[in-house]
Every structure is written in C-alpha cells, then in structure tokens.
Image (tube, rainbow, N blue to C red; front, side, top):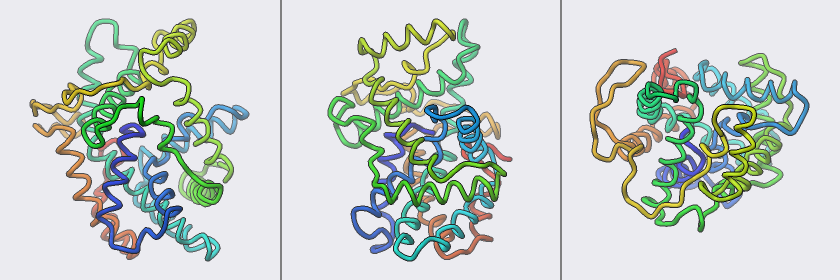
Length: 306
C-alpha cells in the first residue's frame, strides 16, 4: 500500500496529468481509479475456500515483491486480447495499476523506515503488520483532509471501491492472466471482483477508528492474536493539518533498503510519484518495454531492489 484513500486521491490527481482522451468517459475513469488500488484487494480475500484464499494472498504478495516489468508487460498484452468493446476499460484499468505501483515504490521506504523504528519499542516487536497499517491509515486520514478537506465521516473509505460488473470482469481477466503467466498461480477471473467486495465489506464494518463497533471487533480479535488488524486499518476522524506519520517537519530518515538518507515528507513523495507517473505511463502505453524496464530499475512495490 499506502492505503486505499491515498491511492484513490493519487489516481484522481494522476488522471489530470494524462493526455486528453486517454481516459474516456465515466466508466473508464472508474476503472482507472479502481486500478489505482492495485492488487491490494487480494490481501483481504476471505469468503471462499482456503485454497482460493491462499492463491489470492500469494498473488498480492508476489506482485508486490518482484517481476515488475515482466508483470506489466503481460498486463499490457492482456488488454490486447480483450474483446474490442472492453479494450478502453482494460487500458484505463491497467494505467491505474501502474499508478498504484508508482506511488507504492515512491512512498514505501518512508513508511517502512517508521515501521522498523516503532518495532524497536517495548511490546511492539510482534506487531509488524499492525504498525504498517496504522502508519498508512494515519497518512490516509491526513491526505483526505489535506487534499479534499473532508473526514472519513463525510467520505467513507469503502466508497473508493466503486465499480461496474464490466470493470470487475475485465480486471479479473487481467489479474487471472498475469497470475498464471508470470507467477504460476491459479486465480480465477471471478476472484478479483470477490476480493474487492471483501475489501469493501471490511471497511464498511471497521470505520471509523475508535468507534464502539471497531473496539468490539478489536476485542474479539485479541482473543486469538496479540493485536487487532481491524483497529490498525480503521481511519481516524481528523481535521488537523498535522500528521506525525507524514513527516511534515522533514526530519531525516534512512531508506531501510538502500541506506540513503532523506528529509522528504509524504507530501514530497506524493508529488514525486505524480511527476514520475507520466513518463512511465507513456513508455507503457507506447509498448516501449525496454524503456519501461529501465524506469522500473529493479525496484519493487516496497521500494526495495529485487
């Protein structure tokens, strides 16, 4: 990630930087925005048999970890095999997937730097996933206020997963193809739409952070595990311009994957990703995969060389 609100807002801003006519009409815009959520919905697939759940989770992890240029080359080829009437949706969706990757790779080193620092604190060594989710949801809430001046009470996070049946079908076809061709995974085309539905179901039940229902879910979770993922995922209601997780003061931090020092805050990284996206999108659309591979530079979704 970053989490779903930030990816959605990034998609809205990135769409304005694409050449006019590349995203045509409301349904293509919806496809582009949903694509900006990337493979993240597969992380939360739960309402099916264990073998399918495992395959979906594997796909999300594998896509984040490596084979980036190879996966996007296959994704691009998949659009060319769609029925003619679905090609526009497919192109918009895949451009959105690229937006997810660009923001992830740019922002994740800051998030991981904070996560690893927090895990050194007493009692948190077993809360890696929860710390990551808390940082991202904190940035989500701040981004929503900073960019749109609303809170999660006015803008429900689940609303960022709007889609049509055709978008689900096209997205599912593309993910199923790349799952098999690049990662050797059997993920049926129907699993994508079901994963998005599961993602939406979760967020409809855990928002906002600190609510009585979220605390109850957290209490039940902690009967089986030390910490609550539901409470970590839930977004706080904030009307503050301050956010410790966003490093607005531009304090020095060290990229945990390259040891490079930086003073960039999340706002800087967000703008950096917006600036990077058009050139990667151009290489992708033109099919210049040699140039695309150079721009990827062996960096995965985590911002980690692979």
